[in-house]
Amino acid sequence: MTSPTQQLSDVGVSIWLDDLSRDRIESGSLESLIATRNVVGVTTNPTIFASALATGKTYAPQLAKLAAQGASVTEAVFAATCDDVSAACDIFRTVYYATDGRDGRVSIEVEPTLAFDAGATIVQAKELFARVGRDNVMIKIPATLEGLEAITAVLGEGISVNVTLIFSLERYAQVIDAYLAGLELARTNGHNLATIHSVASFFVSRVDTEIDRRLVAEGSEAALALKSAAGVANARLAYELFEQSFATDRAQALIATGAHRQRPLWASTGVKDPTLPDTLYVTELAAPATVNTMPEKTLEATFDHGPIHGNAVSGTFDDARGTIAAIEALGISLSEVTNLLEREGVDKFIVSWNELLDIVTAALESAR
Image 1 (cartoon, rainbow, N blue to C red):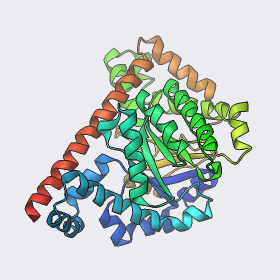
Image 2: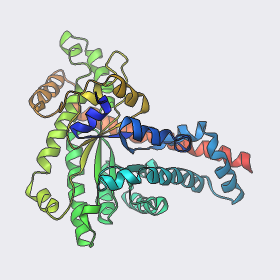
Image 3: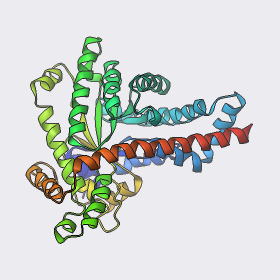
Image 4: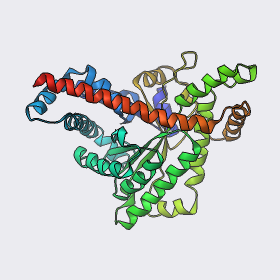
C-alpha cells in the first residue's frame, strides 16, 4: 500500500515542509524527507529562522567570521538565512527540474517591518532574489494592501512570489488580481511567463483559533456546534474562488501564452486545539493544484495515519457558505476576524524578526 503522503501527492497536493535550519540541511534530514515523505518544497519565516539560530550551533563559525569582518547584525542575518535558502534550493534542484518549476521551491520572506512599505519591499525582494542566486527561490511578500503593489512589481521583474498572510476571501481576490497584473507587467517587460510561479498562502488554523474563542464566549449549543469549522470552510471557499478566477478570459489569455495558475497554499496547518484530529487541515483540504505546507509534526502525523480520501474540497462550497453564514448569524463577523488576524500576523513576525536580530547580535558580540 502507498503511504498517506504519497496518496496526498496523487490527489495533486504538493507537500512543502514549513521549517528550515542549517542542522536540517547538514544532517541530511531534508533529503530524507524528500525521499520518504514526498516533500517537494520548503517555506520559511522569521519565526522559523529565530528558532533555528537560537538552537543551532552550526551557525557559530559563520557568525564568528562575519563578526571578524565587521558585519552589522542585519548583514549577518541575511547572510545566514540566505545561505540556508541557497543550500536548500540546491537540494531541491532535481525536484524543480522534474516538475518544470512548479515544485522544488524554497521560500524566504522580506523583512516583516516592511509589510506596509511597498517601495522598500520591492527593493528587498529583488535583493533577496539576487543574494540567494537560485531560480527556484520564492520571495515571500505579505498580502497587506501595500504588499499588493509590491507583489505586482516583483512578479513584473520575472521573480516568483509566495504571497503570505492571506486570511479573507476579499483579500485573496485582490491577491489574484495583483498576480495577473504582475504577469501582464512581466510580459510587457519581455519575461517568459512560463518561468514565473506563484502560490497564495491562505492561513487556516488561526481562523479557527479566533472564531472558536468567540463561539465559546457566545456559549449557546448552536455556537458550540460550529467550533473548528470556520477555518476549513473559509479555505474551501478560497479554492472555489481560485477555480473561478483562473477560468476568466483575462487569466486564460495569460495561460495561453505559457503562464501558470497561482496555486492556493494552505498555511498554518498545525492543529492548535488538541481535541481535534492532528491531520484535520491536511485531509479536509486535499484538492488538486494546491500546496500544503506542514510543520514536521503535522507531516509525520499525516504519514503515519492521515486518512486521505481523494479530493475533499470540490463539491463542498455550498456547505462551506452555510457554515460561514451560520457563524455570522451569531453576530461573529468573519471580516472583523480576518482583519484582526492580518494585523496580528504581521505583528507576530515582527516580534520574531526582532528576536532573530537579538540572537544574532549576541552571537556577534560574543565572537568579537
